Image (cartoon, rainbow, N blue to C red):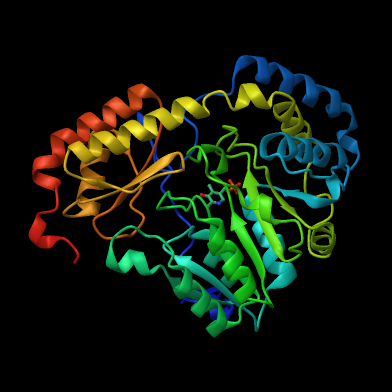
Length: 378
Ligand SMILES: *Cc1c(COP(=O)(O)O)cnc(C)c1O
């Protein structure tokens, strides 16, 4: 062990870091980014906003990011029909930072976080990084039907059993893609009376019509939090801007742990410019959903087993050996994600041309890479 290795916190020993490969490939469909560049009209607005703040970069940014919160509250109000004021909105450098603020404020050593696996791999990493105990709650459907749905009674039972300080729900869920019925959110909220319940809605804008957002549940539930991000639907992963909606009493407490001036003047300016052009930024969402649905239909015709998706990706089952198919696709210049679920790969919905490429590659591979009926998990 190296000299510093010996100094590492005991509870971090043996851990591996988050590490989705960042490879230069013709078709990158592994981290659920948008394949579409930021539109030129928004690029121009960004450049103008940054240029306006550049002379004042000798000063610290607005610590309260007031104008940005106003715009985020406006965006949420406009798109969800639920009225938000700026005290109910908080933001950070990616929703990962916002999640980390929640964990630092309501979690920490001696406390337990509960999530339902498979879900977003950063939830346990952030919780454990802050010294929390992590409980891998089970999605009963994952074991029985391959549908990955959370079973309401089972979720309630696990919430009672573990009495967590934090519960992570993810809807639409990454990596499985399906949105959560709101009854599960309210049931888990009621079953975990000492918990802040976080609904990670990173993919909300991609949900199929009629899928309700958990923001409609916030009124009267002071322990409920809904996190969102500009990384996915806004095609803005490089900016690092995530946010949350919750009761004003809750967001107030997050100021205890955030680093002062955590959102730079440049980040605030860039995010404001994009939010002023939200409609343009979101223009490609429908096109991406079309490609997602095409990927579901076509991979099913190829004999694979795609999971119903409300996100900008599809989890596809039915591979004999997911790792082998992952490599074979990479050999053809297509990078997808092996999320560690046996026989499954997750593929981001990109442009029509990218969908064509990935489908052609899968059609090519299907005969040798399809799971045989006898190998299917019962
Ligand atoms: C991509 C993703 C995020 C986004 O994180 P950022 O830090 O905002 O880029 C959050 N939650 C889930 C479930 C995701 O898949």
